[in-house]
Length: 107
Image 1 (tube, rainbow, N blue to C red):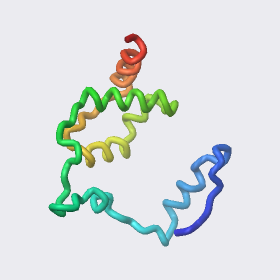
Image 2 (tube, rainbow, N blue to C red):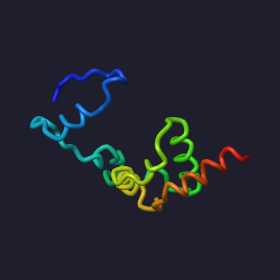
Image 3 (cartoon, rainbow, N blue to C red):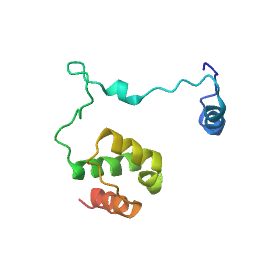
């Protein structure tokens, strides 16, 4: 909508989150439009060789790198996004993610 918010980390994201819930000018767009393949015009998986083990390793690395809580992988919005991008994504828990992180650092 054009509303500006301070970006410093001391301000947090609470104000922006409240604004997004109330903003009347918010434009809802389907992310699927961003994933349309240029030739066929249909939704397709850009990575046909999906490797669930590699995905879990990437998730564990991301959580450590960005200091995210282990429960990040259990957030419903995160699960929905992953399932949307690739239906083969299996739901995993923070316990699984913790074990994956420990494996990263034990090798």
